[in-house]
Length: 91
Image (cartoon, rainbow, N blue to C red; front, side):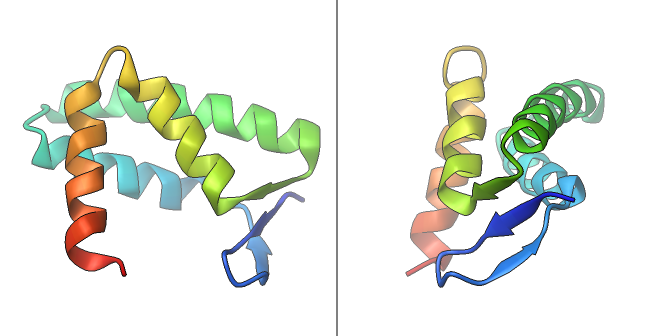
C-alpha cells in the first residue's frame, strides 16, 4: 500500500484514478481528443505508480511536479491549462 501525504500532513491511500481525472480535465480544457487523453493519462499514471511503489510514500507536491515534468516537453498546453485552473480555484 502506498500513501500520499497531503499538504496538511494527513495521509490517504494512493489512488491513480484521482491523477487520471486531473490530467483528463486539464487535457480537455487544452482541446485534446479523448483518444489522445487516454494515452497521456496511461503513461503518466504508470510512471507515478512505479515511483510510488518504489518509495512507498509520495506527497502531493511530488506528484504534481512529476506530472508537470512529464507534460512540459511534449504537452505544454495541458500544463498551462492546469495552472490556469489552479489560479482560479485554489488559494
